[in-house]
Length: 490
Image (cartoon, rainbow, N blue to C red):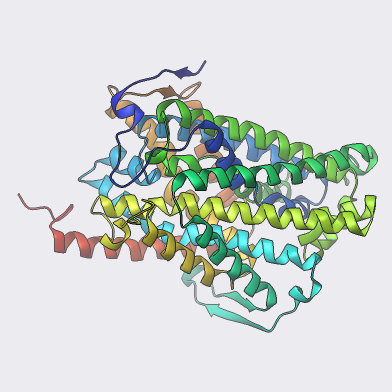
C-alpha cells in the first residue's frame, strides 16, 4: 500500500522567493495529462505499427505503460519529499551531494534541458503544424530543405534535415502564442490548463467511442506470420516501438517541476503523478485498440512514411462519418497539440529559474515578473530556442529527445532514489514507492533496453555525448572561476 501522510515543514515545501503556491490537485492532474497526451498518440500510432510490422505493436504501448508506472513511482517519492521549483535539478543536487558531485550533475541536467526541453516543445509545435495540413493542404508544401552533414566519429557521418515551409511558420507561431498566454500569474495559468484539458479529453473520447462502435476484430487482431516469434528483429522492433510509446507517456512528472507552486505538495504531487499515469495509460490502450479495429494496420504501416500518418484519426473519422467529421477531429487534435506545448513551456520554464536562484546557472534566469511573479526570462529564452528548433523534422526531434533525457535525467533519478534511501534514511517522505526497490530497478532496465535494442541508436548517443562533453567543460570553467567543487579551496 502507498504510505501517504501529511507533514509540515520540508515535505510540505517551504515558500520559495517570488513564487505563489496556487496549484491544487485537479489543476495538477489536468496539467500532467495535457502534457502527456498532446499530439503524440495521434501521429505516432502508425510509426509504432510500422516498427513492429503489425497490430502486435500494442506490446509497445503496454511495455511503455509499465515503464511509465515504474518511473512515476520514482517521481512520486522524490516530488513529495522535495517539492521545490526545478524538480530534477533539486533532486540530483540533494541525492549526489549539494556541494560535490550533485552540484555538477544538477548543472549538467540544466545544460541538457537547454536542448531537450526545446526539442520536446518543438515536437509538439511541428506535430500541430503537420496535422493542420489535413485542414489546409497548402501547409504541406516545402519552400526550402537542406541535409546538414554532421560527422559523428566512430558511428559515421549522418545528415540532419532542416525544413522550412508554411508548416514551419505555423509551428513557430504556435510556440510564440504559448509564450504570450503563459505571460501571466500562476492562478490564471492553472485555470487555462483545465480548459485545455477538457479539449484533450473530448478529442480522445471522440476517437475511442468511434473506434469501439465501429470495431472489427478481424482488423485489430489479424497478425502477420511469426508476429510473436522471439528473434533479433522482433526485439529490435519492440525496442523502437517502446521508445516512441515512452515519448507519448512522458509528462506525468510535469507537476514536479512546479513543486514550489503546489498547495500541500507532499499530498498533491504523488497523487497527481500516479492518477495521470493510470488514466492516460487506460486511454492510450483503448484508443489504439479502437483505431486498429477501424483502420487496417497494413494501411497505417504503408502510410507511416508519408504525410497521411499525420492525419490518421482524421482519416478514420472521415471514413466513418464523412469529410466534416474528419475536419472537426483534425481541429481538435490541433487544440490538443497546442495544449501540450502550453503545458510543456509552463513546466520547463521553472527549471533554469531554480538553478539560477541556487547560483548554479546564469543569474539572469533567476528574474521573475515584477507583477505576476513567474520566471519570465526563463520562459522567454526557452520559447525562443523552441521556435528555432521548429525547423527540424519530427522524427529527429523525438529520437534525440528520448535518448538525451534517458541518459542525463531518468537513469540518474532511478539510481538516485535508491541512493537517497541509504544515505538519507531520516528524510521526511510523505510518499514511499510501492514494492521498493523493484519499480526503480525495472525502470532502469526498461530504459536501458529501449536505448540499445533498436536500429541506428548511435546518432542520438553521439548527440548525448556532445552535450555531456560541452556541459562538463562549461561547468569546470565556472567551478574554477568560482572556487567550487572540484576546485573548492579550504
